[in-house]
Length: 343
Ligand SMILES: [Zn+2]
Image (cartoon, rainbow, N blue to C red; front, side, top):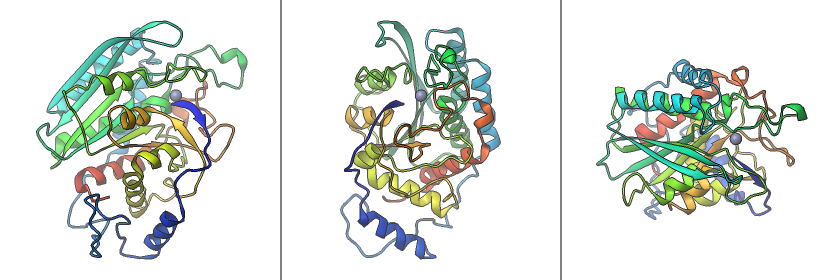
């Protein structure tokens, strides 16, 4: 992700805050928003339904998947490490998913390079009408261009959080979906060539997702909504509700945050309002594929750089990855998948 800009009209208004305040003050946590069917019924369903068991997300497993990706080396499109990691992802997913689609193409980057792109889609319950799309990018940015040391800015970096963490959560989720089939359809989209962009060139990031949105793996593909995981493994990460996410998929994002808080992950999933809007894959899923999508991404309230200090630097390595953060994100995701409450 990249190309941040700031807005004064981020739509997290007092209504949401009041609603959240009410939620947190009630022991029986309630859904904030009526279902999108438009129901205005006063009858509210509990946010966490104890009658529905949800598998335990195995954070150690997700952590190992992050480490395995990093062990390939930077997954830069066009490199041997990228090719090998793609082969590994497909072979793993074929063990677990009902159908695995591999979408290969060649894309042109902002600096006129032709790079291979491999989007991978793992589908579960492909015939189900109710569907959830969950995505993360698996490529690594080719340069540590935000490194504090100018001598490092043309070097490669591991991308442990920027890329590998979201994929690690998706892989563990795929393993769980194989162990216990959900009753809705799930599509896990591993996007490529997300991080090859240039801040100064519009739409130069998220090239794989832009391609997928224009060439979906199944003709006419759609989903009820999408959840993007990007930088979800950092120690003591804070996840704030980013601006475009609120614009595209506010109720769905609020539901995710409310579930995370109800599960005890309030240290990670924060309601504070920060005026940050970023370009990331969720923008193209929402605007090009017309599937409302929000971003779970580590942010901080820093107007100069809202990303973690190691973002696009040599320090984006396994030292920053914490299994507890992967657990907070992964367990909340499984809660959504297996209980799919109304938003
Ligand atoms: Zn990045």
